Image (tube, rainbow, N blue to C red; front, side, top):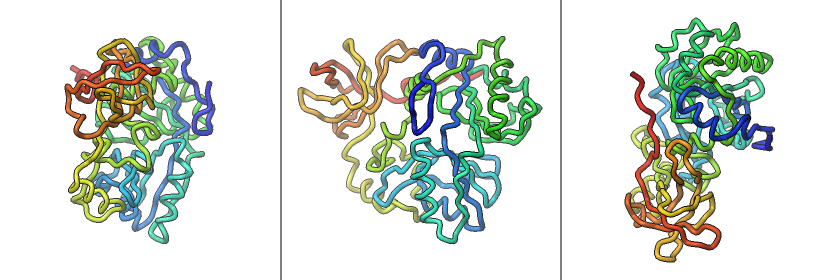
Length: 347
């Protein structure tokens, strides 16, 4: 157990690699109740969400969710979030644990009288059932037709007799579901899921596997790939940034950056010599520092050392040879295409 965002969190239950591979091949269950929830309601709730984020919130209908970014005036990322549209004028926003208070105040201060903004984090337990057998396991416990819930869609229903918001979302690169319920029912829901998945090899999984799993599909982690001084254009998240939706906070700064050219870019790295690149290690080109590693590990799925990091744009081309400074020694690596891993389609 370790402290994380003010919470006591399990790093691992029975071994990081075992938990990682369970999610890739069968299923794993994460307690991610440390994530924060902010709800925005009112006639102008949509306008408020549109003004503070990069993606086009108007595109999501009731029952849909969307990956999005809260931005500041300079186009920097305040947080990466998932927005659920519960009703036409009611949005449920899942935020990162360490940013809950910051995000709530950020939204509340800019809401004025446009909308009601409430931190409802204490009202929810969040469990994530992830892996190729997640649907099979969950379907045993719910009358909901899970096959009808498409990726980034959700429904309300009973799971093991407990009222839940059931969303086809996750952070592992696998199929799966995130379930929100009343905290008083959290332990019962966890036990029901673990019992229901026993015959399919369901394993509890901790923070360690959560990090290696998200790194393989190159999902960014706030505080590593994203922060208040990093823009979505640098982080390869231009696909999230909808300039066509009109005015939003940070838009002018991003338009200017796009016109002038992005000076640094997030890249994937693969080590070509023995060694593991860790966050903060310098990335070198012929002895000159050209960037820094943000996250790195030895991939349990791929069996090789991978990393992400920012480099000067002129060195970001796939195939470019670089080095990573590991304990004072330059170790060979190369820039590779992202993501490192894509799950195989079912069927």
